[in-house]
Length: 335
Image (cartoon, rainbow, N blue to C red; front, side, top):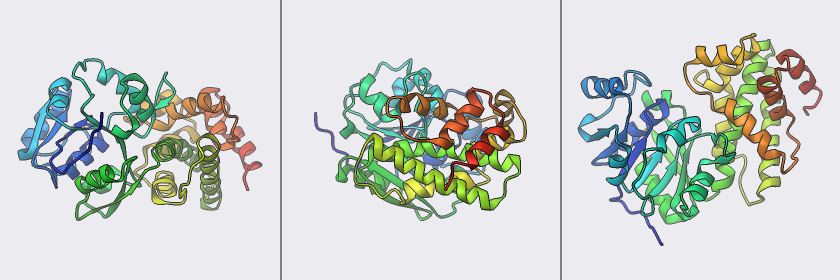
């Protein structure tokens, strides 16, 4: 079945965390109505009363006159044409459990920067395999873009990814504002895996910073992370791609360096001696790179790509190798 987007296609956002809230703010700039699936009644009450999310990204002003909020995922999905997924990947399957409405006539857009745990596939791959959604009906929205800067309306860039150029253009218009510039791409595989890998590398940067390594080393670590990312993409799914473009290198840099990066903050706590459980509790949000590290390790067991940085992060997080020892060994493998 052919499915083409047009300017009248209605959007729904699934999820109510920082990134979901930022996307709702953006969509309200362009859309007459935006549906929003929120299961937390305190968050709903706060949004309707104060016009901001009281739990996440509270600086973002929300135009509640355009919002249709519901805790019923079937209602939200039924009234929309474009379903924007913005939940942490670890919660995706649970979020979708009550869904009974068909997705056959929906366009699925993943704004999730992670792999579906236990399934070892990206969100696009998961919907293709579990819901039989053709890749032509799936899109990706990614950065480099932190939700906190969207809330402040600082100039940011998004990359909209679809296999069909016309669909990408329609989506691009919905996410373009005076403070959001958008570009398009057709590299669904490469960009989605890049968004997963950059979270692992941001944890590595955070661990190094927590251990006391300086900016000189962090620059080397990020440069090698870019090389490692490109190697993984080229050896697992060769394609013509500009791996130094914003969606790949730019997203890696901002996630590795920004103080807003939860993956970097998580890594810093690990580097300073916190346990994984303590770091997760203190962070208070999901660090996608934690789950991604184990998933990429599993996926790479089929390909055998040389990934010393990702391996070091896995060893620290899952094999309980001391961070200082793993990082010292890693320093001998960088160029």
